[in-house]
Image 1 (tube, rainbow, N blue to C red):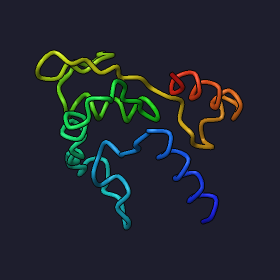
Image 2 (image 1 turned 60 degrees about the vertical axis):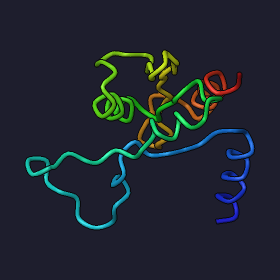
Image 3 (image 1 turned 180 degrees about the vertical axis):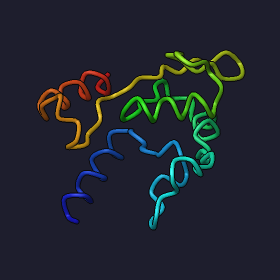
Length: 120
């Protein structure tokens, strides 16, 4: 718990916001079967970004998160940017999954990729 609080404090003080693309991604209880799976609602990420002009990049933890974002906010299947009203452009990048199941990369490699993407 203490480690989580320290991590959260460090992230927020670095100017990084973390949000799930889908609002029900962490709902507890039984998960729906794949056939009965309904469309999940998206969090109001674009509205958040519109209010904060300093945001220039949206980074996704894994390709699945980016795919969900793109499908909800209509920026094209392989888009690497989101163009907002008024022409403001946001870069869309995929970070390697932090999951232990993502064993194709070492933790050091994940850290290096995250650092290269987020430290500007």
